Length: 456
Ligand code: SAH
Image 1 (cartoon, rainbow, N blue to C red):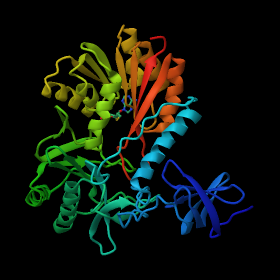
Image 2: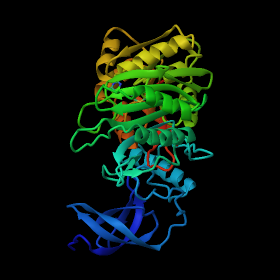
Image 3: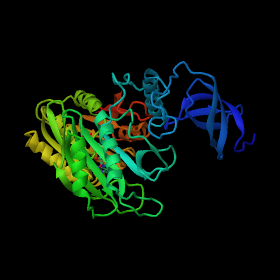
Image 4: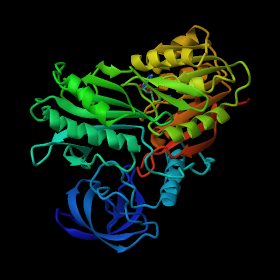
């Protein structure tokens, strides 16, 4: 059957895509992705795009409703690209995340019956994010607005008040937006590349209830900087740092490489268990502080360190995992591509009184082979790569360091599964995984997996 735009179809929805859209099947089996539709539902949807293998359709009505459907708590959840799963009740979200991980490990990783523990969810799956990046745009009335991109577009939907952000972030965003208007800052236009204020980035320390406010600007000159600082400080008693970050490049990258502290501290300090960590404006830090502690506890459990163990912390960011494991480790060696995160990692080692940790700037795929050539060995190797997973050279070298255990923290089941297959060839057996819900209301799946050396 040929489908054309505008055509209204009946579809059976059996699953969610990795982006959280309903996967709807027409009578002939042709697949349409429909945002807002849930597994188990029969829907009517209007075709908006038809490709060779699948298409995209817009939800018109739900004919048979899933028992897991709920009213989305946020009124713009259906428009915004952030929370694709809000209409899916939280228990169902967690079950689906486990299933996604399981399917990827079987289908892509070639594992039979992988042991996957239940997903560790949150008691309150809202208000959890410790960092937000709001694009600044001009609203219909000519005034500045801040919000989030509409799904699949760069149109900004005004929404300082986002339910998954920490309440202090929402407060900071509201204050910043009105201040931009009061001071008459010009607003960046991505079509022409002109205008000054591009993004407002906020980080909070959940443990200390402190705020770092970062204005990303298209240019260095900021004559109203003093008033900007004064205005923010007046409205936000929890503020500890005001930063200007300059990004003059066209494109989707939010922050540029130069940051200037306009007032207060250079970093924000977060607490995880017994450790505290300084984080620079641009350094990676897990966005869900409460669940990060759960995640790192699991890493510690899987690492099973004994006094004096040698730990490699690969893709170490600000050194957080390695340092979190430091009580039982005798030696920690980290590698990370981002220089500012490595500075943070070194500073964090000092701050926590750990003198047996060292951190190196470089890519895992370049640095690990060298460590191995130089005779480096590890008892436990922690891998925590970005979404695209590990480079095969990094995995081969991790295996060549002959750790008894490899603990793999993944934010993408597909690349975890691919890498599990490589690790198996390199002599490591998958033992089990525990997903931790770091991103409630969104389709992101995070999991910690344990691999052990064969024959040990
Ligand atoms: N383990 C840290 C950071 C994990 S995020 C934590 O728990 O906070 C992944 C990190 O990998 C980011 O800091 C990113 O800058 C870094 N990274 C990305 N590609 C890399 C590569 N090829 N080699 C080394 N580090 C890389």
